[in-house]
Amino acid sequence: MDLYKYRDLPDYLSVTELNSHFSDLLGYIEANYAASPLGKSEALYELADRQFNTYEYLEESLKERIDSWVISIWNIDNFKLIDNLLSLIALLGLQKSFLTAKTSLANTNLNPEVRTELEDTVTELEGNVSDPYSGFK
Image (cartoon, rainbow, N blue to C red; front, top):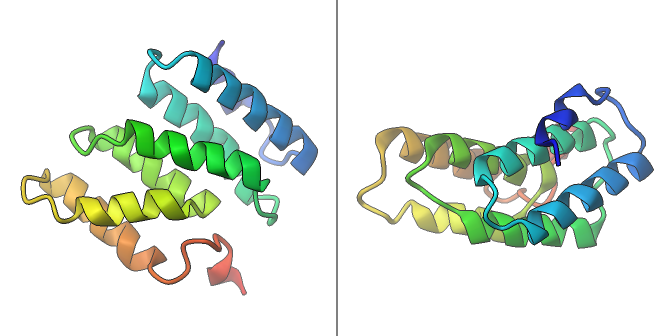
């Protein structure tokens, strides 16, 4: 699967189209565990960004699958991956992944760059992580 094809999608897609893309991508992700987590996170980010533009919440079953995947590949030693995953948490309202991010702050050996990203995200989302649109109301 070409994970870069999601970059070329229009900025605005219908919820139905997005659900189909998410489902296809998640099927690939779940079947290809060994493929690059960074590439998969970038593809998910492209879809999440377009999902956010719909001003509708992601279908719960898709959200749960993404939340589980984010937790399964969480790696505080990879700044770019963490940056992508934190974006997914914010754009899709991933509560379980948010708790993983928050818990990671207890690690005393965090790279300063990663710590700053985690702290900023936790501060921004604390209390409203489940509602990506809370700042727009």
